[in-house]
Length: 246
Image 1: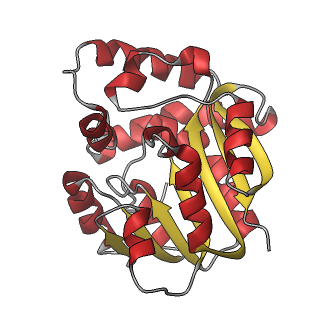
Image 2 (image 1 turned 180 degrees about the vertical axis):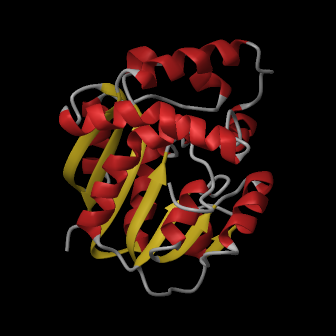
């Protein structure tokens, strides 16, 4: 772990290595993160790249802004439509979105917006929850429209005219336990409209101090090591790397 780094959830650690492989392949300069949440990943991206984040939830973005002060970058309150409405600027090399696309009713239209913000041959790096059959109370509690079978994700990327580079599964083992815990917690969560549930999703069950962050990192480490040996075979989510055609 990096000194001073905001804590990641255990689930974020489980997909972290696949995300790092995507970042290495893309080697971007300008990065846009859609759905920055409370800024734990934003902090890590802003240390390395010319970073812009989008986050419509005011409570989450307030914490993300505080976290970004030490590493730079900028954070905007809004969605990709905000950037498309503004005067054109230099396009992005990479757009990333982690556990975001499942919150959007028309996911293909959202992917098309991402493509419009990319330079030719620019990259998309995203993660989504896997397997339609696993849709349950935790998905409803955080405002998910869907979970993705692999062919669903492939179809959405193709319809948005994005070329798939690779898709990997993440989260086998510990991820299944975490989903069970989230489902139990969701049973006690107050019902909310989809938009409100999405807004709070980035704040739900987040580690709130360094000790909790160390615990989640330690719990995830053995499963991360296993995932490096048996890469992408099974899990609770997908990480995908795709590219805008030239």
